[in-house]
Image (cartoon, rainbow, N blue to C red; front, side, top):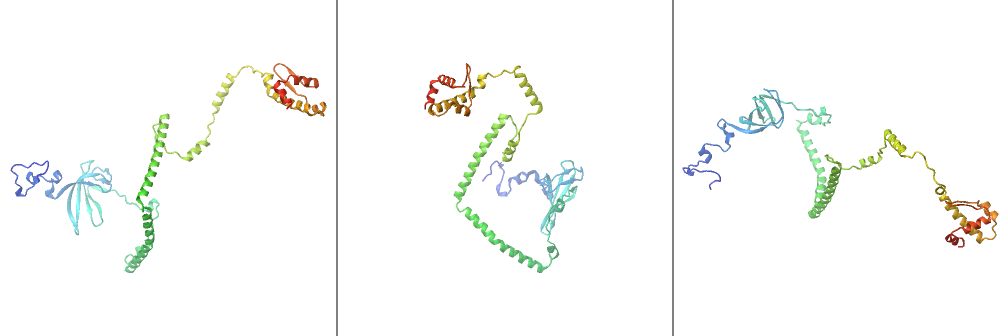
Length: 331
């Protein structure tokens, strides 16, 4: 079948077994294969570690990519050794890196220097456990057998734990629908809560014209904010005192006697009503015994003053009581 977007000229003969690339004198890899006759293929190479350029002495970090010339330069047993030759992007210097199958790493051959980033864990304060016995008896065949037996025993001991984990997993996912529905319910509730918090934060930001992202509420911050009490400074207290002095009148007006004795007169009237009621009902009470127990009372009104000293004045006070109050005397 004829390929799409490919032009076959009229003189093309498929029986010759030539493809379009061979017919046009091109390669499937395009310009990357321009040096393929010398065994060189252009590839995209990424630095496995940081290096220092030998020409410009600039630092080139790990992971920087270059268009490198890939070439096979040898073998390590049956594993090929590849060479990657590339040009520095900061200068015109060329450096070469080769694979090292024996040590399973990359080696800088020329044009650059590898940055030494190997470090000892003890320098960083880490505790490294090292088995000195393994180092001493690593070539002893009897020790290897004992070590293998120990590893087998440890594996057998870990089998029950693995079985428990497997059974627990099977139990939790025995009903996938219920587990999935429960998870979806939790997700929906969290989504609503997050949406509500987002709307609240957006309202606070708009109200206070804030362009920052608000953090989550912390109960400790809420408690600490309650303990903070902002009191006015000394200068503020002075200003408040000045305003009170300037706004107060120059001469202080005395309150009228009526307003002062209003509450006391009400209590005296109630007391006098109780006393008159007792005298009306109990004929054996003398006037002297009453006034020795209860001293005379004074009533202050806005129109006149009444002082109860004798029976005539008491009767006069009873005549001046309103009809509603008189009914209370004879209950």
